[in-house]
Figure 1 (cartoon, one colour):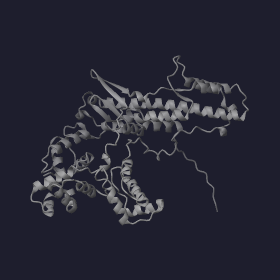
Figure 2: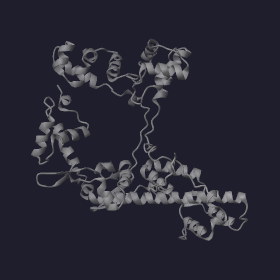
Figure 3: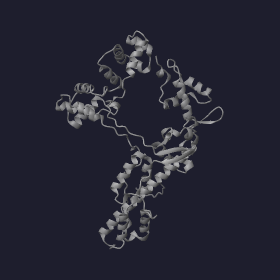
Figure 4: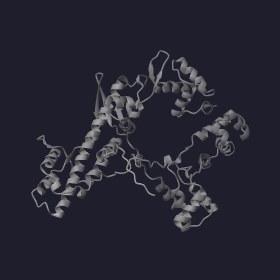
Length: 476
């Protein structure tokens, strides 16, 4: 027997305007112009240009028109189709759709080299499939059997591992050296075997990679000397020098085809006689206005036949576009206001640092501190901190650079974890590379400086700094 029940619940949903603001807030300055151009293309009621000098803006005229005109005479609620902003949808789904640096295609360069091989049509299809499987760093990580399946299903080409390996070996002779390798060992060996002159160092390096790769990655030098049949540490050092000069990511050096992408700061801070002045990058303040012709168009419809069905549809379209233009301009202004408020709060919190650029002056600061100061949600501050940068007199920095946890010293003073990381980096930089400092010894050195942190915290900070363990820092 079926039963019907009625339940009442409360839920929060973002309005279209809020979604628009969030999306505009999280994109950096370099992408804002493109987003505005897209909006100008899809909305004829939005125009470039400054507001009128008489103090009465076009958006004000839109509000006046709304007050004078009762759209209920034109439309019922079920006739109105809300304006759908470009890119609306599941916020969770497109959270990763952030700007990506553009580069020239390595694929194009490899395809051009493929054309120089005397391959038949079938082999060319296989070659193109292999090149298409090469990742951005230059490696092919897709298993051979999976590539065979790809060719069978997408190209209707039946092949074997032997044929794939044969064509792959030809592609691995392309430039840049090391391209299309399946792992680091193969990548380094491909580069060494391309050397026109096989010196003793190169020969020893090849032998080490072929027979002692595991020992090489773990820096077990004594085992390498014995297993590779080397005479002394000097031969080992020369061979390792030859290996370390190779490129572990050949895809990042695609013949100089990578385009340079310049970092455009969102904020600019100037120091005028110890008084810090904050300014938004001019690109964050575009001149946008509501189209007067669209406002006039809506006003003229008020004087026409209100029973005409086509007229109702036209009014619906015009009103949607005017609303969308006003929402977009308001979202841009709200973006500017939020950015400035956030940056001012950060500068106030780290004032001494911004005066001198001395990282030891950085104070502990977390997202919650800034969110409480500007009376906004932590997620809003996070969106600003994760995608924006600031230009200072001592460099351009991402905003997240200024956030760090606090640590209490022996004297009871709170210091930034970034300061501790700087001291840790200095200890490691100055260590004897033949006897690197263990995490336990680093812990004792930090405590001698007054930083009371545990060994596991030392390990955590070291990993965050991308510094390997002591054994892997060892040098001959």
